Length: 420
Ligand code: AMP
Ligand code: GLY
Image (tube, rainbow, N blue to C red):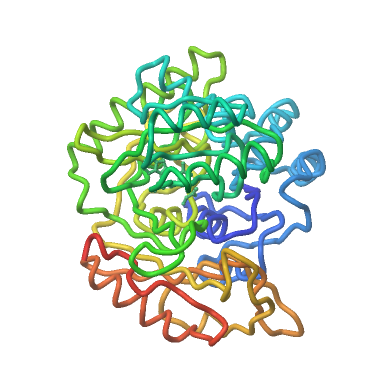
């Protein structure tokens, strides 16, 4: 069994670590991966090869998979999905657990996602789409604040402004529609919703929707959910503020109807359909969909999965019934980032070897020079704590964080606050 994982972050490290534990005894190839992922071999016995190919080198990745007899490919980053890697691989007769670019529009185009939800009555915030600043400004004057402004396209998690004042909203509109900060495009203006957020990752093939346990991410950079939005500063699972019935409701009324809607629209989904949901007074509503594993949710959800992920993906691709089992333990991950992130940040911070820790560490942005591990990105690594309770998992995680601490790194000290 030869598996190719595409991507280079903590998410892909967790995917590779979990898939490597399969009873199928796989050999792993990760393109391009990061040097921290080599630890998977010592932990699981599975051979791991880092392949020096960029996530976006679609044809080169296909040729690599053909030449190396890859049996299954799993894709992390959305950019690769937008390049339609799933179609390119399928045309070459390669098995890939990833949606086509057409199906991935559920993530890559906010307008597509909102229109789909509207058409199929999937609960989400009321919205309007604009290309023209004057029209958008007029709508803002009618609606007032708070209001949410979203750039329609990939903006690395930075294209969303939750504007508490009309002035903030107007500045965001000017930025996106007049100054074309993220490129020429549209904006979606959305009703402001309130309630606890949670991430529901499901493994999907056509109509089959297999939910994993939910997680909660911490998007803001600093304690108390203050500061700029980031790719995610920590996560934990389970999420006790969300009752079990609400999760089941969301699977039946949001995730399954969305999978059916994508079939009806001629772009059936295969891969990870991720619901970014909010439990409002009127029940769960969709904040956003992603067409891939979430980062850092994956780093806490996959450790909680007891079942064989590799086998699950193969079974789902074969349209076999899949019933995953989960560990009872709680998992909580704390991201350690370079000072300055998500703005411009310190680079080449020397890091302690995470293998020396008792805690599992997933590497997000690291490299090696002359045998020394160095940071190589804004989010550097995530330290995972495990425990009978979330409190215990949190204590464990922060003990590990203490051991990795460096004056040029920072982390949030309140991951899991809503639950503990
Ligand atoms: P998104 O990239 O769409 O997930 O948005 C990033 C963050 O902005 C979300 O995790 C929410 O915290 C917030 N957000 C997005 N849409 C809304 C909304 N309609 N109401 C309130 N908050 C929102
Ligand atoms: N954790 C949010 C995301 O993966 O988009």
